[in-house]
Amino acid sequence: MNGPVNLERTADGNVRPVCEFCGRKGRAVAPDERGRVSLWSLGNGWSCAPYPVEFVHHDGSTGTLYQCPACVRRLRGGESLRSRAYAAPEQPVGVPAALGGDLGT
Ligand SMILES: [Zn+2]
Image (cartoon, rainbow, N blue to C red):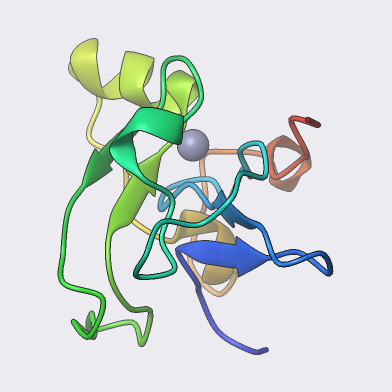
């Protein structure tokens, strides 16, 4: 799949949240009845902005937005983060691409 996504589906049918700012991925969990990562199964420190599954954001991604613990900390510290910084390399990006790693399970 091309373009930004808020959820990544694993081969075994689970879903994992993708940080809207840095692209970091959370742990894979069993999806809720609508195919999302439920609030209760989000990893420690993760946050989310709930949207309907059908909602299409201006960048083409759909549904609920997720924020990883590192970005949540930066936001709370007063930084203004640009959504999808990892997906828009044509503009200056303050966050190294290496941060788009995998938290593991
Ligand atoms: Zn992040």
